[in-house]
Image 1: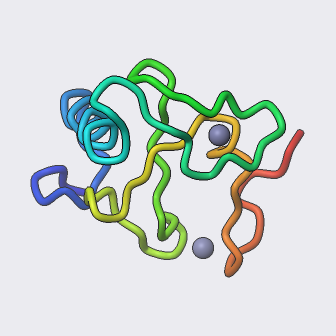
Image 2: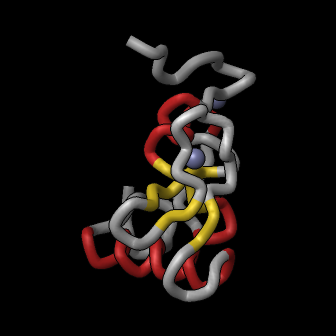
Length: 93
Ligand SMILES: [Zn+2]
Ligand SMILES: [Zn+2]
């Protein structure tokens, strides 16, 4: 997948820019709330160092890494979220 059009995951610079975009858009520019918040150990507040990019439409359903499809989530919630169409992406170990 090409990173040029924003559909792919992109390189490390793209990923950094994407995270900062999410913090600016959904947070206060420095921190942002995990948009899922379903995991019991969810930290709630995220920074650029802890935030992971969740896709509203998951990759298995064709969801892209375009900014409009990205939301900020902690790693825990992101890992345990599953797709209702394709069922769990990653089962807990
Ligand atoms: Zn979370
Ligand atoms: Zn799916």
